[in-house]
Amino acid sequence: MKTIDSIGVDISVVLGTATMPIHQLLRMGRGAVIELETHEDDDVQILANSVPVARGQVTVQGEKIGVEITEVLMRDRTKR
Image (tube, rainbow, N blue to C red; front, side, top):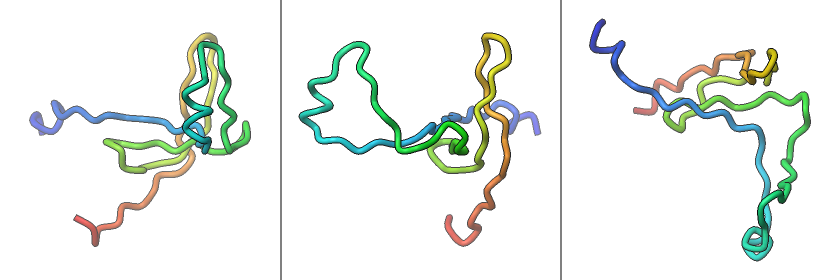
């Protein structure tokens, strides 16, 4: 078990997505706002090494932002 404890996992949280033309992206500067195709109460996607593993809700506790897991996704055991 000690070997498993030392393995690093990259955790990412996807708040939402947006689609825009490249020319619009290239014109963006500091302070630009990208509107996401999501709502404030929508679940965020939690990825482990770029693989979706769970969904959750953004939480704020004081000055810290976190994600509360609301659903753990089942892993497709047929893909390896």
